[in-house]
Length: 154
Image 1 (cartoon, helix red, strand yellow):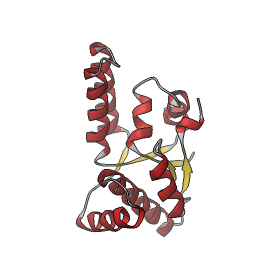
Image 2 (cartoon, helix red, strand yellow):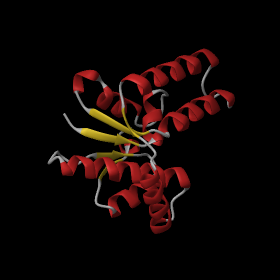
Image 3 (cartoon, rainbow, N blue to C red):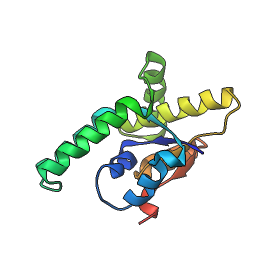
Image 4 (cartoon, rainbow, N blue to C red):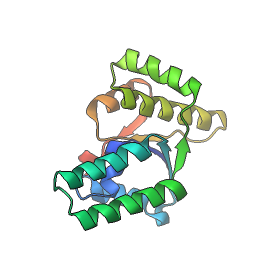
């Protein structure tokens, strides 16, 4: 049992078929007993990604609707969320500046760092940061996080 922080670029692979999907699905199986942490904004990002894929005809409408339903159900019931607070917003702004990240990527990384710090305070094992975004992964590594890229598991 591990604790993973999933960025949207990695989590969407659970709900669509693409490089790394099998690896992500295996990590998210209930039998794996992994703890999955997300930034609250991941709900918006993954829903948007699934809707946009359907609009571009990369997902059939029925499959898209099922994927969105499954994701939103899991988001509400299964995943641990890091809330966007004033402190997290300040940390995300500093993270964006330090690593030259896009806005939501900075929020994702700041959320992961907060979750990791909370675990360390409780003497728990560190999180594993999961993202399919190379720039974000580099920034996470620079911040001392263990990083996994699902694209490395075709």
